[in-house]
Length: 231
Image (cartoon, rainbow, N blue to C red; front, side):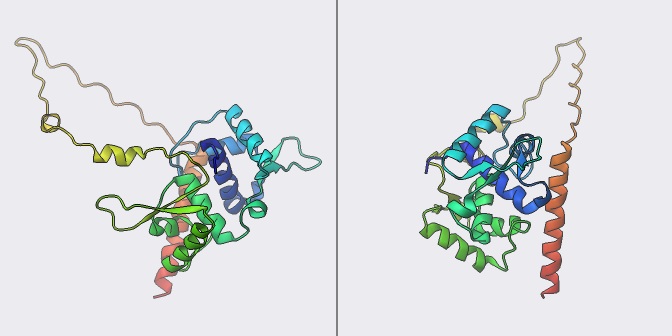
């Protein structure tokens, strides 16, 4: 499949918000843009403008993977996904695809922990079962293990783009010994040491990001509580 990065992000956000905030779903264009540009629960973090979102929705509509869903009395246009009709109707499969679209390649353990608000998986075996079904349908693939990593990772196959993973590439680059040595700056004789630059002011996260982070923390605490009760 050849979905663009923007199309994948839009689909993932529509899936996520359908499950986590059903009262506001379908989404307006502004709500969809805010969901796409969230700084939490997204990898990579993007800054799409309205034109990019509109273009992605238009292309998804042509594929019959999304459509306009405004009611008769609605003032703003709203959009919904059609993956449950065109791709798969299984809630567990949609949850897996949603996470992989929004966060990129992940291990089964990461998927289980992050799927709580989308679809609760009883254990890792259930996660593997869902992934195997998606692999059989060529919607998901297992990636080679990275050096030093014990768990395998999985990625969606909705795009032909094979962008490198910056975090991994940066970690694997060798650093010259000289670069690791601290650099000591000494002022010239008779001159004072220059003042250290002022620290950049802290910026508050947008309200939508803070709410999303709190929802994730609450979901994680609930999952841990259920696990403790089951012992």
